Amino acid sequence: MTKTSVHWFRHGLRLHDNPALLESVKDCEKFYAIFIHDGETAGTEVSGYNRMQFLTESLCDLDEQLRAVGGQLFVFKGKPTAVIKMLHAEIGITRLTFEQDCEAIWNKRDNQVRSQCKELGIEIVEKIAHTLWDPFEIIDCNGGQPPLTYEMFVQVSAVLGPPERPVPDVKWDDVIFGEISDELAMKLQLCPHIPTPAELGWNRECDEQSAYIGGETAALAHLQKRLKIEENAFRDCYILPNQVNPDILGEPMSMSAALRFGCLSVRKFYWNIQDIYFELHKEIKPPFHSLTAQLIWREFFYCMSANNEAYNRMKGNPICIDIPWRKDDEHLKAWTEGRTGYPFIDACMRQLRKEGWIHHVCRTAVACFLTRGDLWISWEDGLHVFLKYLIDADWSVCAGNWMWVSSSAFERQLDCSTCICPVNYGKRIEPTGDYIRRYVPELASLPQDYIFEPWLAPKSVQEAYKCIIGQDYPERIVIHAEASKANRKMMESIREKMAVKPPHCCPSNVKETRVFLRLPEACYHNVL
Ligand code: FAD
Ligand code: MG
Image (cartoon, rainbow, N blue to C red; front, side, top):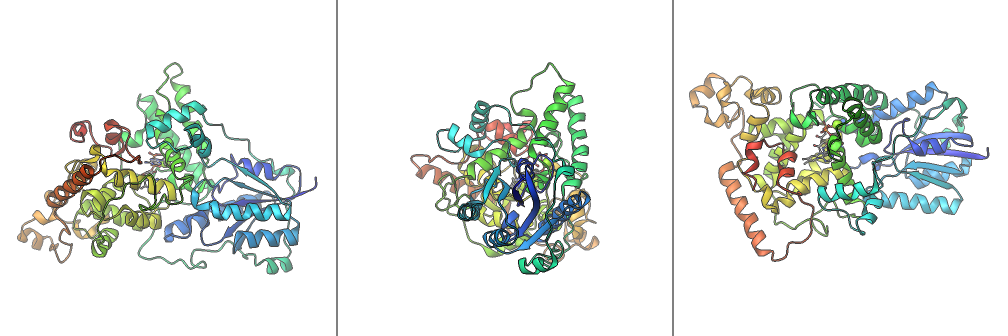
């Protein structure tokens, strides 16, 4: 026992299935758990209030759990290299452990820390647990390039075999926690408690109220409810219940923010679902990855970004096609604030800003509307808004999805103005209009006939229900039938001019497009 270990939490904000943490407490004299607010880590550079709140709750939960076993979470503000240097000087840290942050944006931070630790003689232990496979291993296995379609990804990951199972929990009884005296705390500029979003400079912009509580404890409790839904689906002989029956009005059932911050281990989620299935249907083998196909999408996008610092941009990004998008600040603002005049789109955007989370079908609807569908505004602008407001915002998963839905609009498969029509899409997903009534209250009293298309309401109806279009609720900022027709023409001409199609992030096939956009069977022919 000669080591003083520090485990640096960044993402991976959990105690379960945490291989780097497990390594950290091994053979060690003193153990410290830390988090560093550097203005970037855990996606804090572009963050709205809800995500900061989620992060704060996650840190508080870690702190409480550690206090229950005799330790605590030490939170610092500053540059990681500066904090680690001070910890080396003051507490003699000999080992630094952390979970791999595989996205290219963290390379600079982590390379600086790695080289500083080398200089100071601090051993580094870095473990992969944020993803099911090591993205760099997938890239190697694919001949040095990330697979550009989901189908290719599935093939490559199959070669590597099933993901590892979760590691055991830490035995806290055997751990000796290091302490920091008051005097040293001053010197190290240790935060006296976990800073609140307000203390870090974040205030509510509108009426933000997240539907999800951050932290491992909440995530694990939530997981049990979620697994029950998967189990019931397996019993009824179907899979992926969230895709088969998108319920945009129901209780929040997503694990995405917990997975983003690592409050829930993706390997635990993956294996829990697999095990439930095989317990019920021992003999029937489903196609590889089909039970947890959504989690493979997450891997796919992480992998694509791992070596690509330009991944969140169009220019200089080798996997993204250049499209001459329009700059239109007014339209962008109307879209962001949920004032496009299309009730379903506005409901989605208002839910996003208020609650920090919207269903996949809502994300695809608003992403299509902003880009190839209606406004012809760059996916980069949409990405920026999503990164700010989503509590599960992921640099790579978010940009990947935006590219898939928009930049790869170049794909003929996505050329369908009727499928993703802002009116019909919403009607198909939630025909009662209650979703619109919940998030766009000024339309709530309108009769059902007009809730998706209030501009069709005669003046007398608008007056009777006190909802004058252009006054109480905006006029449509574009006419979908016209805009989508013009956009499709534009796509066609780009396609024609491009003699050789450059390799880029795109759908694997028509069926995948239909599943991804949750389009019914009837739309199958339309997307051809
Ligand atoms: P489920 O269907 O239950 O899936 C389980 C988990 O699989 C999710 O929690 C998520 O981690 C992962 N997953 C599911 N779908 C996808 C997908 N298409 N791509 C990658 N991972 C997926 N998801 C994020 O986690 N972060 C983002 O920043 C993000 N941005 C998006 C932006 C756009 C434009 C679109 C169209 C989708 C985006 N998604 C993002 C993917 C997806 O919409 C969410 O993961 C999903 O809605 C989360 O809900 P769920 O947990 O109920 O999903
Ligand atoms: Mg989920």
